[in-house]
Length: 118
Image (cartoon, rainbow, N blue to C red; front, side, top):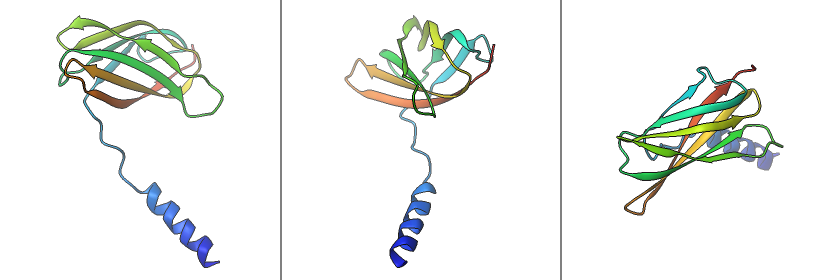
């Protein structure tokens, strides 16, 4: 009984930890806005990251869906675009943005995205 109680306390305490800090700031917008099921244009602004190769990975919270991946194209001044990111299901998504900088760093951050039915 004591072991079960101790395990429950440990699980509760670990769930109360603050969210992981982001490696960098990213602003993500979609066209259409709000995001809808189908192909979306993703526009990203990374104001504090020097020139970088940017990749995106979209995931949903439930099991069984394969991640969606894309490479972003730089458009200048810390801005990047993905012309056709396939949002194939409505619901809560997490888009993981990874930046590989020219100085060799790899930075990641998660951006929540709500996708609505068409």
